[in-house]
Length: 190
Image (cartoon, rainbow, N blue to C red; front, top):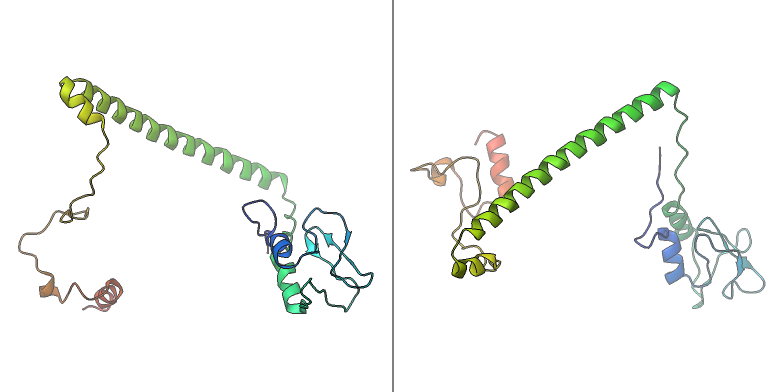
């Protein structure tokens, strides 16, 4: 199973970011080994690919305030910063198939994007043309964005028009019943 390393927005791994904030003296990913001021007498605390290393086997690291890092915390930090397992080697046919699938996907996505952009461009041109045909006094008002909120009585968009004479109470529905309860009753056959 592949386990990608979880990273923060800054690009550092989670364990590296946590170790910088919570555990001063412990280095982050990519740093050289450093002698920690918090390791006590002569212990070397460093990092290897973002994983914190203990000063001596069986010893527990301490931070400046003197709190000890227990084994569970260390295990958790190592799990958060786990490197992904290498991808298995693919045969030439599998590589070619994956390449063809990717190329087809990119082509379809580019076509879909171009269609959406062409549709949007057409709508913008039609809007600008309609505004240009308005009288001068109305053109300025038409170019101002409408910042008013929608009316409170506006209906939510639905797939069907309102049905005349429909009453929810005829079907056992009420406004105060939550949607999950209504859905469960419909699944159970009322």
